[in-house]
Image (cartoon, rainbow, N blue to C red; front, side, top):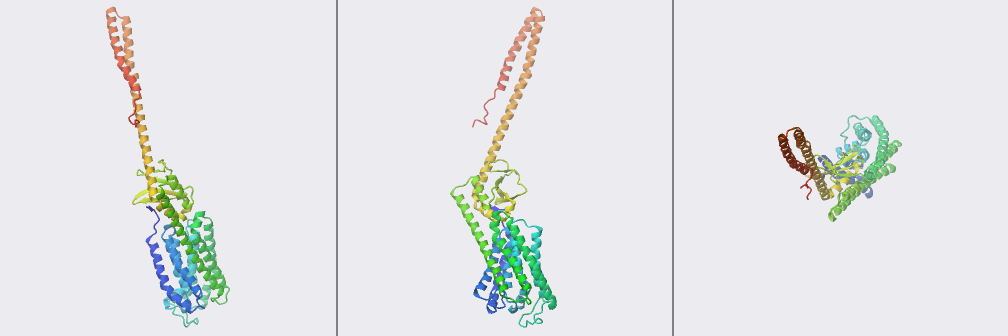
Amino acid sequence: MKARGRAAPLASGAVPALMAAAVLALGVPVVRLAASYPDTAPGGGAPWQIAVQASAAAGAVAAGAALAAHRATALCGILLTLAGPAIVVAATPAAQARPALLFTIVLAGAALAPALLGATALTCPVRPLSRWDRLVAAAGLIVAGLISGLLPATLFDPQASGCFTCAANLAEVHAAPDLRASVIRWGLVLTIGTGTGMAVLAAWRWLRAPRIVRLVNAPVATGGAAVALLSAAAAGHALAQPVRVIDAPSRAIWLAQCAIVVLMAGGVAATALRTRRLASRMAAQVLAATPDAAALQHSLAESIDDPALALVFPRNDGTVIDAAGQPAGEGGAGLAVATVRRASRTVAEVRYRAELAGAEQLLGTAVRSAGLALEHVAAQARLRAELADLAASRRRIIEDGDAERRRLERDLHDGAQQRLIGLQLFMQLAADDASDAQAEAYHAARRIVSTARSPTCATSRTASTRPPSPMTDS
């Protein structure tokens, strides 16, 4: 039993696998560097600090993979997965990063993690994505990846800046310390704006969503918004420093962001557990006793908190019926439809409010768990519709027979019967005016006409009497 649109594209499964490999490949050397150089590591080198950052990176990849497996959350899942390696890069002590490729990646990508997490919150399916949502998310990623990352990296020469222990900068185009400082400063200013904007917009989208959608997406939406807001705070703190260094406040902000990511991953896991419990409960109901259509519809409505949810069943002739077998109306503009299929055949359609699309994962789980019950209810609905069609066909046959009998009765009464009466009257008048011999002949003819009328009257009475219909004997 499949709910159409549930499976994500293959790319949504490949990205988490690649990001998991990247976290594993980068994580081991970065942990060693952070432990060896705790003063220059953004998150510190204490065991608990390393554990928080490692848990954040691994949790981002795991939670992103879980979200990317569903079409409704595929985009935010991919962004969350990408944040895993970005956290590892941001946690790396830049001056001690080896080889040159890792050093260059750290220079260009150290600011990407908070922007990716803020974009994750913005693309969370609490509401349909608007043009402003896409614009703000893209702006945050451009500021973090280009203005605060790649552009300063192209202007940085480690040896000219006094970092003689640093590896070579593979992204260097032209050393310009003053221009680089100016670009970094503008990047911090823009980060304050984009971080605050992503946080406010993500929180606004989440608050406007229906209750069940807020509940399902709360870990990702609120966690990503909090990380984006903290990135704006970190940028403001860096702007206030004469020389940018890793101090206690900046380290506390970074560790707080990592802790929030761990909570996000835990929230995604809790939602997945809640979904499994819903599936078990639905399956238990199906196994205990096959529910009727009303009970099944009520259970599905409870899964996404939509009392107006409706079950309809397409027929082979293209019509759509409800559980009673009666024709169902067309879905409105504000409705979303989840199509339930068995192989290539459509079993049922679940119509629900379009604004609850963010809870599609819960509905899909409930539908799959109630697969057998849905097929049973669909078969009953189609049987009722066929019985209703048969009854309507019987009524049409009986009505057509009644109409034909009435036509026959009318023809007998208004046709031959009237002509025989007219002929009998004509014989009577002719006999009154004729001689005795002719009158006797007219009277004989009149008796013959009268005799002929008797079978005609009997036939008319038979036509007007409705016989029992063999269609209704049963």
